[in-house]
Amino acid sequence: MKKFLIATMAVFLIFSCGKKEEAAGTEKTTETKETAVSEKEAPKQEKVPKSERVTVDGVEVTIENKRIKVGDKLEDAELIAPVNEFNKMKKVRLSDDKGIKLIYTAPSLDTPVCSLQTKMLDEKAKEHANVFFYSVTDDLPFAMMRFCSDNGIANLKTLSDFQTHEFSAKNGFLMKEYQLLTRAVIIVDEDNTVRYVDYGKEVTDQLDLEKAIDFLEKEMLKK
Image (cartoon, rainbow, N blue to C red; front, side, top):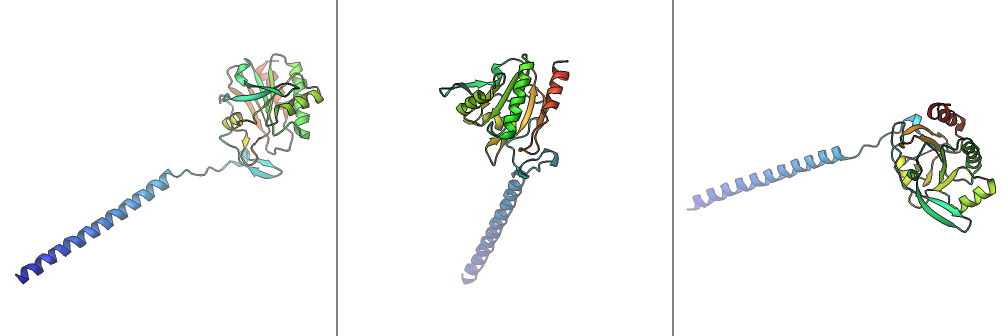
């Protein structure tokens, strides 16, 4: 009887150890699989090509979402337009206007470069009444109204993305670190398909707007 009890205990111990080792092995395998899955699913940090980097005073900034390219559709979004000097404003969409559009994006009208280039585009808008010209910034609408009044801006529409940043984020114009629009010029056709786009590499520098206007006239208006 004593021998029988010893033998039974030996068998129990062997199976118990086997189950523990099996459980440990399963646990290890599961952990390995989970690690492999998490590594596989972890998003890879995409490096921005040197040609597409945007800087402010020489320091690189992050552009939210992918930069829009020729052939892409311009994503529609609500923007805010100033209405009058009594701080009235309204929500608008670029799709409200049907036709060819030239859109200039910038951090603020209240900077030397933005001011200069907005005035230039206003003059060009006067020459091309069949094209919609816009300046999109993060300025408050009443500041836009004051700027237009002080500088005689009458042919170009000033719009603001200050409330939601939806337009700039969707289309790749939003600088993450500043929550402001980067400097760029984009031309779209009647179907809102991008035909021309130029991102300024250094936000504090002027864009080559003459090049954009030349493209507009020769390729879009066939002049």
